[in-house]
Length: 217
Image 1: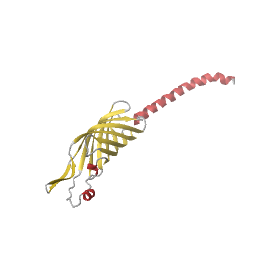
Image 2: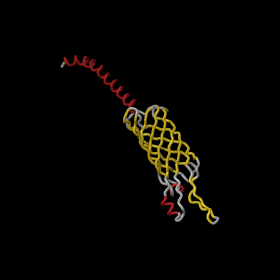
Image 3: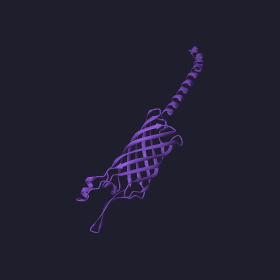
Image 4: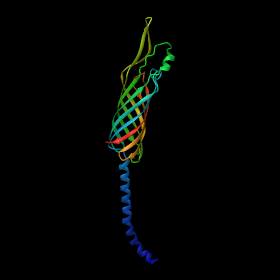
């Protein structure tokens, strides 16, 4: 027992370097982990999915949801924030059936619509040091919807069947999503956005659901 007590200081001295080495190894592993999965300083996102008109009948009555795609460049603001610029294009197909039901006997004029959205984005990553990193953000931009108009004068009376002005409007939106890193510089992404087109009674609220890939540049 006395021999063990005498040897205890020597054992402690021998264990200190080992403990220090283990602590240093843990720090290196943690730093490597964060380096591997944390958001890059500069990234480009390429996504695709669908956009859904939700609120105003001028658009929802005769046009259906359609495919959309987007690209977004993001730059580092701090450890958790990114800012950047992006663009999206959505395509809305004309609904022949609802038009024929609303105006029986009226000759059909099919006019599809395209929406182009250019925006500034800010994004906050909730857990930037893990492989699966959720985020939320906000966007401010401009959306232009190509116009579609169908009017006739019958018996001196003007009949308007639909009228979507081709104008540009300010937009504001909120978004949320998830990055999942599959390689050091490549991540898969899921993203949803709810955007409102300001002072546009024919458009209103648009919902977008996208999936895509994020690359470090």
